[in-house]
Image 1 (cartoon, helix red, strand yellow):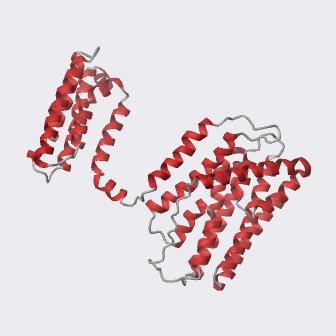
Image 2 (tube, one colour; image 1 turned 30 degrees about the vertical axis):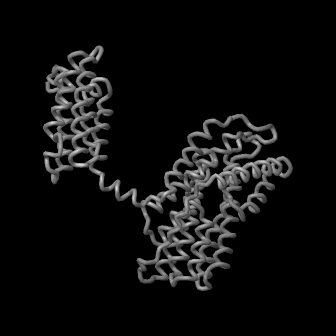
Image 3 (cartoon, helix red, strand yellow; image 1 turned 135 degrees about the vertical axis):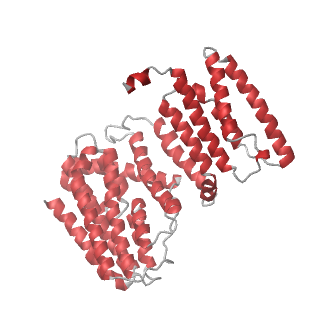
Length: 422
């Protein structure tokens, strides 16, 4: 009964009520925003904004075919707002333009409601309310920006949105069965995760302590994080947190590799999922044990703020060259030595940056390497990388963290080896 009654309500009435409600909400937000401002300085708030919405509705429904009246009314409104803005600058020397833009958007609500889905109209209204309300938040947020932040964002847009779509998908040759698109997509994926980690450290967790910094650093590079924390151990008396942070970064490395596998080879990702989740969980457990056994007073002043921006074309170029190099080497090893050769190569590569090599494995689509071999090679490379990180931590770190580092890494490495053997 109620539904039948609702269906008989004229659509124009429903649309009119929506215009009134949305316009009134925007107007109330304007009144709240300018509650401490002299109203003689404003052209209006709740009532005026609501009437502007109704004005646009009337002119739209009178001539919806050619919209002549709607455009004429918009021109009149624009002239009146222009006169107001001119006097605002001349008399009060105030240059704010937001209220005028909001009035013009409110005027356009009627055609939006008639021509677009209702969710789109509500999205526009909600966006206006949020953007207007967050004026101070935006101002405080921009204070955190360095001069190079937008340049960095532009670099990522160039890398991901301009260069990538223009590259060919065809393999370079029969011998080198990787396309330029695949090479650059690997760069975009790794750069994207690194850039995301950088943004989190810089803007969301700017004052993060050792453990959180290590976790975020593991998204970027667990090796670099290990080196930074090991050196830091010589400066502070936080052996437990330093050791736990190094293990935590390694645990996050497995999650990062799992994300990359999910992007490039879902079959490999599904096969790696139980192993890498287990390695990450074991790393968390080891981290927790270290923290519990080495309880120290919470030092709020101890921060690890390595927020160097990872987006550099030089870095991307080096990554691309390494990716191409490992693609050639992998093809040669597979042709001459088979799976055993790939496993040995994975162990050797582990002492370097493993991302280019592993991403190359994930994109092997010719069938020359089985999924089982790719999974084993990935685990072996990560185990080898853990060995070199353990060595870095022992050499660069304080003597008092060595025992915890060796025990923690050896547990993870042994689990890696057992996983390959099983």
